[in-house]
Image (tube, rainbow, N blue to C red; front, side, top):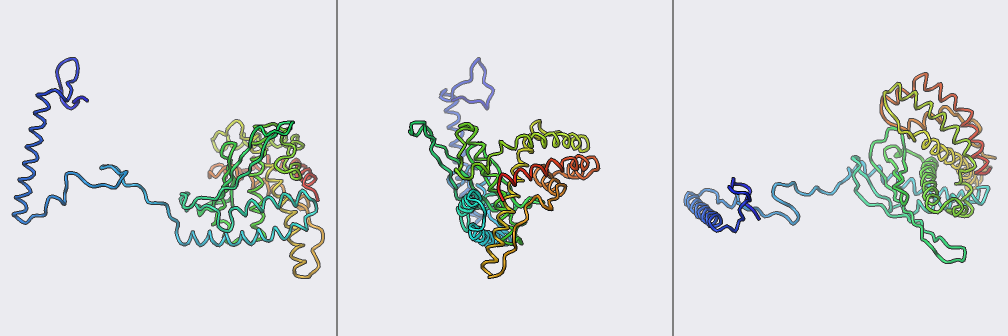
Length: 384
């Protein structure tokens, strides 16, 4: 150890064990102690506050250091925020019951299996397993873990690898101007779903089913991408479940995705010019793939909504509403695209303003026919 607070002569700093300097320091320290004790006695005689009120050395909690701030208190959530989240939780629990009651009224075994798996997965988090974020986005409560685990077998039957994917779901009291929920892939091994209570506080159970299906669709597609990326398309032919694999396989929609990617590239060029921003080079390709997930979620939600209406009609002993109306009938491409782009692409004011410009809206109108084609293909894939 060396003394660096003095200017010492010579080529090297002198060690603290150097006898003259060490003795001088000790003598100075003893004088300071004597002076401090003398001052204490004088103040006590004068009935002044004892120097212990202003100690030279302070007791601090374990893990703290003098001059550093104390550890932050655990994040909390306001009563209003907690009430909103509890209200949405109760509504979601009701929504999951409605979804389960609708199972017999879906028309294909693949649809029934997909809804069963989605509802079962959400049952991990509701009514009490979800995590909580407060209005600042701070984690107040941890989420339960929904784990998807499967064994990868060799042709002879021996297990060669184990595949694991974890998902956690949080109810958030954060402000979300447009999205009711969002899904975030964390690498290729995990996902996080957020549902925004402020947006959903007044949502009916029937509508909340659609929000749940929407985010679970993104999560399942993230699992499929992860699995294919690690083991290849051939291994994923019956993944994640044999009956639902064809619904989640977008390989037959590749030509549609390529067309939408070209449309999005043209739209991005307009937005970049008007808002003076730059998008990532892969942005159009990523959003075109995400659009297919959005369409699948909407088509499947329509099928489930129709089944829930029939289940409700049977419960009320009334005549059912008849055949459901698919998303392709009465579907408004312009509204769908504007909502999708403004909800998922960005939140900056300049970009939202640019999206409303005549040039941007002209590009979006040019997408309508190709989007209708995607809807038709997805309805065929999902089934009646």
